[in-house]
Length: 97
Image (cartoon, rainbow, N blue to C red; front, side):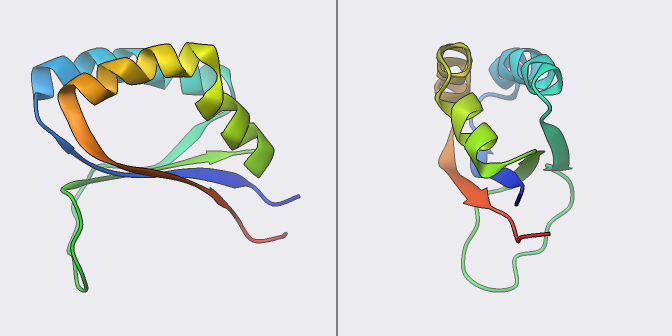
């Protein structure tokens, strides 16, 4: 079964406030099998345009990535992210093993 991924590209508008979201999302994802593959870090945009921060989180399946994103618990925590950042989020299915 292919894994699922959250691919996040955003700009943090308030780093201090964004830490509140990080304090929520890291334990939430860890408790639900989410694994950070990319979390910020150095980036060189070589084509097109990107916002300054890229995050990629891996899940056991596409369905699990969907379920966790749409869960009531995440949606409540997501409000923190929306307060202190703007950007794009996609849920992507990985390649079949």
